[in-house]
Image (cartoon, rainbow, N blue to C red; front, side, top):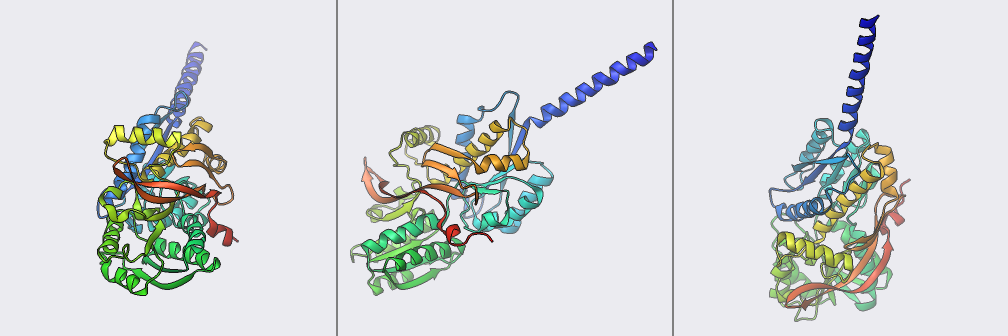
Length: 399
């Protein structure tokens, strides 16, 4: 009898140890962060990485007692859907993450989204802007933007300012979406598109395209070019050909004059008008604190662009879910928390997730490049739209 009792106690204690060990393990939340650390897109990926790391430094300990976060970082090497898909599979199957976030590129996010539907894996996009991606997975949510959010209200505004506009966009999905959104709104407002060109994405020479614009003599040229060195290159072509001196205004979404790239563009960028959800020059207390923290961490002469804010807000949403669920991540409960998310004090202003589409709801600002304190800045001169949902989804609801 004594032996039987001892065995019973030992088994009971062993069960408690197993149960306790399982509980501790369950309190470690794994987050897969995908960015671009090599290839031509590495500068943009570096911005995404900086936002991720800044959040973790400032907020990485803001978790429920006994809960910790383990981050697993992967390089997708650029807009490579097959690579991105393979990395996501590894994160889900091998690393057993409970969230995927990051992801710069629309084609990469579009390749990953169906996997997250199959695996029931919450996927929070920090940047990829393709309008239809949320329709590919009920476990996809976005804290970044869509180009329709910027370009449709910009088209409405432009129709009140200009009669004739030429469009020049990069020939891939984001360029097409920007062109479509702007053109629709501009024409609805009575404007005329006097010419349209799509520019090859790989190694483009912008001079002949800007010459076409100059020859057409529009009031303005609308352009979407990937943020970074290509945006600087088209700005240089615009200035070298004298479009600014010919009175042709340069307008576009915020990718055209990102805060991190702006100083390298020079005075030709002065007066350029963009519509965007974020500016480092935004006069909001939360943004001032954010910019100060960024400069302290990375250098006083550097400015955070929208990639930084996207990654920062993506991690804020991940941590919000972890706190709400006290570290015990169930994917369906996580998505319910995500769909109800509101943050009144993002650096960009108030944001929320649209529970119907799982897309971002945010303000859109009209910005003009001006010199402020000796440096170029995207000065927010007007709020084009408040708490704007993606206009494309209003026109194309999921059936």
